[in-house]
Length: 285
Image (cartoon, rainbow, N blue to C red; front, side, top):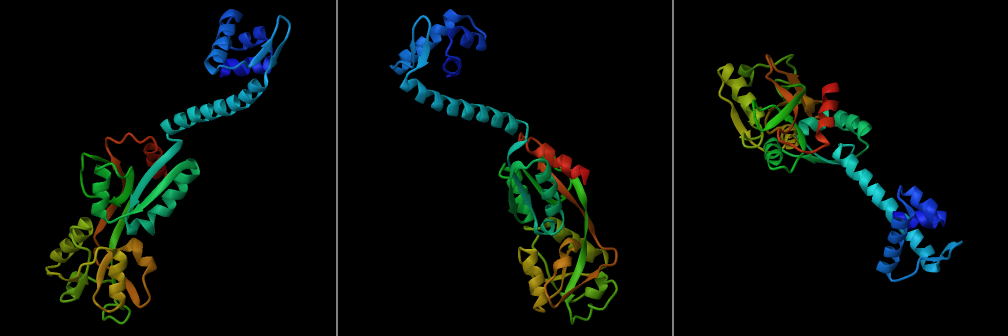
């Protein structure tokens, strides 16, 4: 096609051959081969004149479109390989949705506008599974200790905070400790769903010599705070979600509140070219 376009645009075998960096005889053989393969004459030619046939004029338009599409495909392949273009599947928990994710997504979109971000809000254990199974390229989650299968970058720290109904006896306290919550019905996600949070809650109460009573164990933090709003118990939730609590609830700080790292993580063996730039953005925060 490039040989044909060169001749169609110059209408001169010598000039077209020079454009293609070859001598005229092999160039002429290429043109003859094209016409033989198509079974049509593309050029009318004699010793002094070269002109496109009607079939040649139509073929020229199609060739230009095809070559432009091919060149675009080559550029896209290079851009995808370098991580400038492509797709990034990013998982996150509800806690990150209200704090880290908006800022991280905005910054990444600024430097990689041609990468299609697929956002997946999931519970923590689902995120771990999806990362290891390759169904997510990266995720924002709470740190879960050393995991040789994941690489991580710190995005900050979060801490537990108490959420109670607005008319609860603890609603007016400046800060609350484990002993003050003894006997209260707790609402928390089960360990199978949010192991980091559940472990932090259990350790916090154990340090104060209190055995917690878990009355309800929904999977989602949004459900947890809604149950608190209905007066069905109290909850220890990440501070990152306490800024948007439902009406009828208040949050109070905990004495010596448990803290945990929020991290960006990705499979250690990831080959996704879009992930390194996401980590660069995270490290710039």
